Length: 277
Image 1: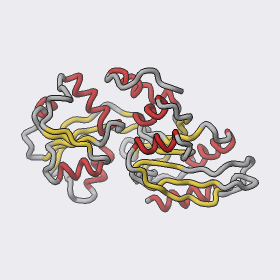
Image 2 (image 1 turned 135 degrees about the vertical axis):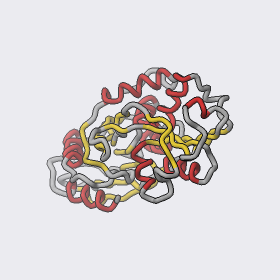
Image 3 (image 1 turned 90 degrees about the vertical axis):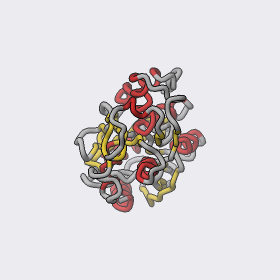
Image 4 (image 1 turned 180 degrees about the vertical axis):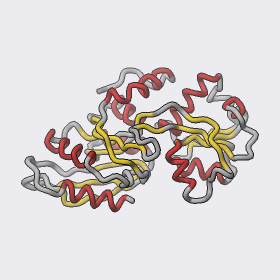
């Protein structure tokens, strides 16, 4: 849950350090993320509060407006933020509980009794995506559709943007769509609710590994504070839910180069010009 992560960060970063800092805020999609570090003599975190963002677009806007100093972004929205001029760098990324690695897989799920057996069977069907800044809920399926000859603009009966992975899966459960783009971790977590199960749903397609979603930090922060943040995350106990509510197996350091495969996919889909670093 968010509460244990909040308590962990407050305890870890609430100890005396060696540098002063300004007030800081963390933002993230679908979860409350706001972190304040007061102006005190030794950069002590006084509290960790949380604020919900409606989508990745809003997080990027907050970063550009200097309303955030840290944020949780997807791989694609991180690169979009750089394109739009956000002065951020990736700090850490969660280690996926199911793979034990700092990557995850996108997938498309359908009902177990669906007549959809291949990706090409999706033509003429209704499909749910998360939003156009979602890596697993949009970018990866879109790239695969292009490779297999599915025209995104004309081959579907309906395209629905739901705003979240849970909403996309709910649309499938309720029969609003015939398929939903999400990721393996979100799908497995959804199964715990008892709504989507291996008995009533199945994976139609899954992607190659995707670099895990980064927690990014403003380049305006003092290097000493960024180091403390890295140390806090990579020293976190296994089993804490990450800041979007997915249980992780800890965190690992990441850099811009880790997201090179996503850079190439965005170029392949003409979604990028020249990335800003």
